Length: 157
Image (cartoon, rainbow, N blue to C red):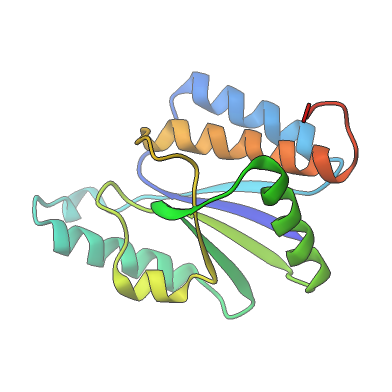
């Protein structure tokens, strides 16, 4: 199963990028993971929240394929612990999911149209984090999940 982390926004700061590469490298023996940053065109920048969300929706839905299994990360999503994350990944693999998409929406969230495309909606925390930091947290949790599934000592329960 391929895992892609999609995130609306700008490229990562170097220290975030270094952390993401670190966890992706550690995850590589278990499962490939890729970060896809979806950038809205500079000329499309607007203060109109709904218009911004619609522009982001267009980017997401244009890239989303029927064979993708979309999980939306949202502060109102279901809160899972690390073991439950690992179990969800295992379920996806057991179901034959080819590409799992973990979507970090834009600063204003996602449209209902994007939300309806998601098979699941998860929350990392009830706290709000900057998008770049969420990317790093997500990279670590993916690694932790595969460590759990492979009985690595990384996760201490």
